Length: 113
Image 1 (tube, rainbow, N blue to C red):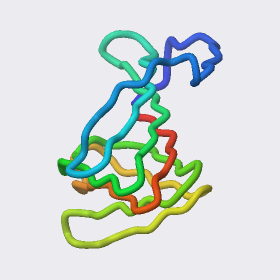
Image 2 (tube, one colour):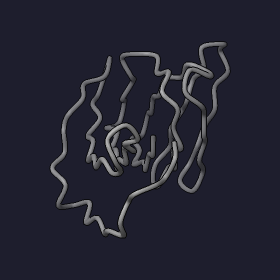
Image 3 (cartoon, rainbow, N blue to C red):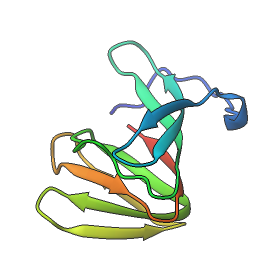
Image 4 (cartoon, rainbow, N blue to C red):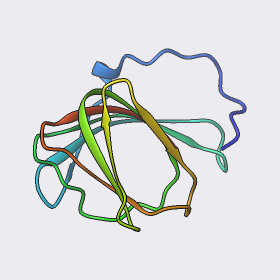
């Protein structure tokens, strides 16, 4: 990701219409913005996982993810499990380590990829 050709802009996240994404259980609500020029688009998201959410896929996309509220478990394909609470983050590169998210209590996240 190269951050270039992006003018200063403010996002009022409550004004961004959410899209629903079903998991194996629960759902994710994504409020998504795309910024930057074609060929180097950066996706910025405010994501809410409902209590009991379990992702329906292994993700290979790189992210910088910050847990704003709640608790999130991130499982790596090699079996490692990481528990993150509000104020904790992770970063992972594209195609580096497949990962999957789940939460018992629900979580609100800010993700850049």
